Picture 1 (cartoon, rainbow, N blue to C red):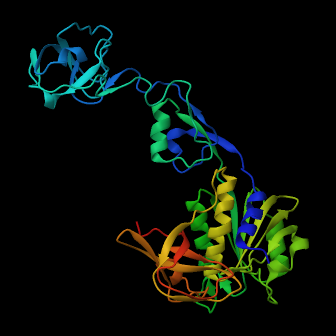
Picture 2: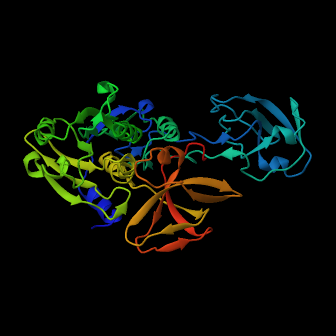
Length: 408
């Protein structure tokens, strides 16, 4: 069996961005930029004051205290093209206002007697102090290298400030979400019978939505090969398909049996990991669609882990993200655990920050049917396949944070 990192590489090697669209920058929060942006403006436009004070010649305050004549007040936005000054003269100036061309220093109000028309400066300043040079932030023609990055509120501010009111962003991938199993009922079909409610689809849909995709829930398909083939063959206009359940080797696991009839070519099937060994990835090719397809495990925790580790990086890559893979960080094991040799484990752990150190505490059970382990934990702790025996408290461990609620 292949290892998780090998499987993830196969996934990313078989997906590509789904195209771009142009939208208002104000509406681009959370989208992925599909272009770099060229500035249309100099920021600051001219030399500007960094604070309220007085625009002076530095030579005039070489000897302290210094007496200066105040010519008037310059507010932010004022035209300073006619604001001249000579030796022994200065202008009162507000934060953000353009500095007269002859001035080379701004003295804070606190360092003066703040009086007009004659000002006393009580402390000297270095030449250039409190002046923001023109183009110090960005100049016309400079590039903002944001392609492949998620657009944040701070990036929106940056782009608007340089005159970029529209931006090309990658389109949101459209994902078909299907659950399988004759023992499963969707919420709309639930009739107080003994069937289990479909809890996998809501988790998948939520994770996809958080990651910028557009998921569509197509319901639950029973363990009947013909019905599953029919729904796969009917899919149109989707960029990706995610199916939970039916991917194992049981007598009623349809997904593992219908590959040829449904037009699926699997790139891998089963990964040396726990949870989620029976996970598959391939290409669905029919007369109506050619799209990547995931066969996700039916056990809820296994399904959620595989969605996190494989599906979400895939939809990120389809949105053109430069770094679609989840990042690991280091924590310290908070209590002793035992590990069997063989599989790479991704144990659910609670995280706590104590005296600046991040500690990882394994959830009370690692059974893949216990949804509480996902709700109450913060991260997956990766344990190598060759680890065996007791891991002592204080051991450094690598974790993927999937839930920040109540943590930071």
